[in-house]
Amino acid sequence: MFFNFSEFLLKKAELAEEMCSAAFKRFDETARHNGEKVLKAFIDNRVSERHLCSATGYGYGDEGRDVLDEVFAEAFGAEKALVRHNFVNGTHAVTTALFGVLRMGDRLISATGEPYDTLKGVMKGDSGGSLREYGIEYAEVKPLSDGSPDLKAVRRYAEDCEAVFIQRSRGYGLRPSVTVEKIGAIVKTVREVNPNAVVITDNCYGEFCEKTEPLSVGADLIVGSLIKNPGGGIAETGGYIAGKSDLVELCAYRLTAPGIGAKAGCSLNQNRSMYAGLFRAPETVAAALKTSAFALALMKLLGYECVPDYDEYRTDITSAVKLGGERELRAFCEGIQAGSPVDSHATPQPWDMPGYQNKIIMASGAFNPGSSIELSADAPLREPWAVWLQGGLTFAAGRIGVMTAAQRLLSLKN
Image (cartoon, rainbow, N blue to C red; front, side, top):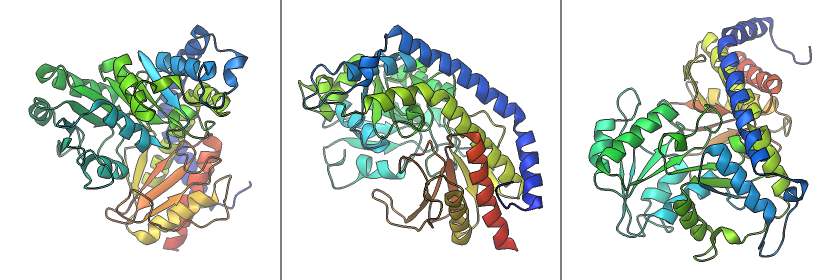
């Protein structure tokens, strides 16, 4: 009624939504389970109105900050959590975890192949204070031909290392994202040959997509961003590290200073949004998963190759669509932007984003710029000319954004 979509697209969208009915039911069931889990964490930790207030200065005795750590820890099944607004993004949180637990002469392996673009410079860069510059060796285990982890190779590599890195989401790749069950298989393989290795999981895009988190299958640390899943679209910034108490403490020393750790750092009026975001997160993640499944079904009906399939079991909110070229990438991102609540009038342009090897085009008409739990689409201008889609605060709005992008693609063919 409010948008001028073609009859052809409207019929395809209706069919796509029907195709997703079983997946939608699964997402709602998972959200209900995780919503109860999060509510229990709030109740068990006696969250009160005073915890929503904030401290300034050094932040000593910031009770709201400290209780938020405890709520996150319980919700994720961790011994301890470090939740801070001054993690600038997921890459910063992951970097803090890596430098927190690794020392000169140690060896880090990635069990899931090449990491996300912004982490390449952290792990194997030659400058800027990378792990390599600090004398920490790094190696990657190439996934199998179907994109799944090569457990035999993981076993060989893990025999001589201090830490194993797992990237749950696919990043700018077309490999399958790694389910919690598969993360458990990696952990089991590592433990058989090296019980002391620290297993660190980049949990970005994966929180609350399944009923369990990687800590439940033996990972030592999980790391993520609050402007992705666990911030629920409400948290304005920040990130978290959660897991074993001693390791989280080491990470806190890296974030602040040895001997200070998590005991200082004021919350600067961010507590309320971080509490509210976590509370809202399970339902928001379900909306993002519905948006993703609908997009995959619709784009498949329009003849595009998609990863994963619309009805696959999901472990993260990201999806990829192979579009064929730069012209199509631009059209899709312009459509997502045009169907967004903020800056819908803007036209996305490729640019040199910090930490990326290629120009990136990104659509993100978000209340919090760069928030990928809100509907967004981005792509590096390179082969295989795929766009990565994530987010959607509500399915109703996410559906419109996806349809606007599809209409732009259809217009190119006419």
